Length: 330
Image (cartoon, rainbow, N blue to C red):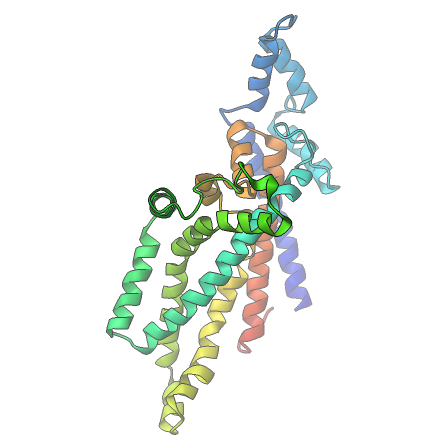
């Protein structure tokens, strides 16, 4: 176990280095450059004695953009290793500080959505497998395929149109009610934020539930057709015990590993959903930083995401070995 973890960590460092170099090269080559925009604004200020090109040269030297891709990446890497990610060009604070301000929104949104996915998808997948080719199975399958097929923007727009515009039950954008939020009590503020997160949560659940439902159904069908299940039935065990004790436990083995890989989604933010509902989470903030070319914040955000992805894959492998005694980690 220890050798396996050490080997994976060493591999992860190499993968992370290559990934960060590629991301830095892409960010460095973006047509949208925050420094160029800033240089144009400074040159157009009244009384400016420098041209846009002169300001651009000064700013490139100030932000380390005059060293090329490899040189600039090595300078960034040297600082990042010791936890210094610079200062966000857009937010004028260290990326870690801005990240700490917005991550809680995305974490709550991701955690609640994940719990609802598990509560809804796994039972429905198991029921569909138990009643294969029945009306229930066909209904669950159609529902799952519809959820898989619908894009995020369609689901979000439909929910906002029905529950926000026509029925008026929920706010369609933002995290708080700007008109009266400051007048609410502490509990009222919490409930106001929760009320604004209902539609984004439902959106994430709808677009994610179909895949987990189908995955659970497929695994359950494979388990129910296994020899040891037929043996258990032949011995006269009650069907409820066969399903709940023998089949259900083995069905969860691949599902647990799938959920173990969901760690990045708890912290990465639902970029599209947050953007559609104007929720100021890490996904929304990261996207806004990318489109304006804020390299310090974008590099920190994507580095954090890469580390979480590698860590999530490692956790999934360890969970698989923990729940399935047949698996040996070498």
